[in-house]
Amino acid sequence: MLEAIIVLLIIIGICAWVLLSPLLTKWRRNRIRNKPFPGRWQTFIEQNFLFYHRLPQSLQPKLQGYIAVFLAEKQFIGCGGLQITEEIKLAIAAQACLLLLNDSGDYYPNLVSILVYPSAYRVKPTKRISDYVVEERDEVRLGESWTRDQLVLSWEQIEYDMQNWQDGHNVVLHEFAHQLDQGDGMINGVPKLESKTDYLTWAQVFTQEYQQLQSDAQRGRKTVMNKYGATEPAEFFAVATETFFEKPTQMVRKHTVLYRQLKHYYKLDPLEWT
Ligand SMILES: [Zn+2]
Image (cartoon, rainbow, N blue to C red; front, side, top):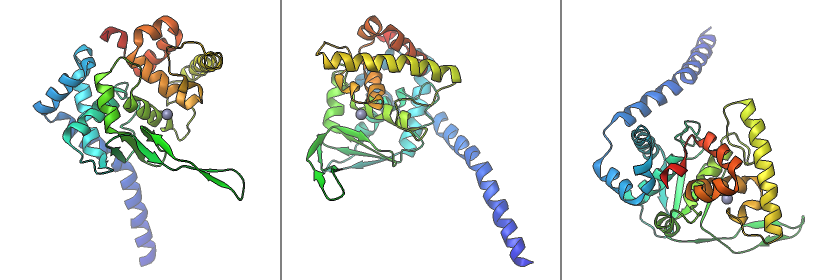
């Protein structure tokens, strides 16, 4: 009898936790969002991100709220001797949260830690050639997004990107676009969308544009998007995101439908910021 009561209490406890946990998270996030945004954070963002001034007025406090929660929830780890500063955290948070303004990213739920190296870092990925041979090659990377709760970035590259917003390259936007893509557990260049129709349109537009970039890359044609986007659909989405935010004028001219699709997804129009 006692055992049955204990089991029942455990089941009730688990059910209560499952039901209450999202409410508690929502309450905690609202509390963080409603706190005044620190003046020095605001100054840093205003001085380093021109897009902030151009955002519609209603979106500035919304971005601040996202940044505050992001900073409260994510763990930043300095690697290779790098000391994590407020500046590093804000630089990453401001750009990562720009991608959340459409309210569909849910604070990158799979992401726990952000590892930051002082500059480009070396990794030794292994590639299985056969059952007996494993190839190990040295690779230099600027960033990567892992499905298992970590994302890696180079601070030197982030600083460079902040000073060169319109060159079409942005390691933070790139890696966090991968996080959005991975949100549904699949790495296929398709983030979580609002409706069935959105998925159909997305597949149509992205497949066509991806194939076009592959063809342009093979033929050595000049492209608005980085040719790295032609390597696989997931990279195409990440590169398209960088281009959308950093080179909207060129993108809308050469890839009007793709631009429109990204504008619909991110619920932002970077053309208005130029
Ligand atoms: Zn990538």
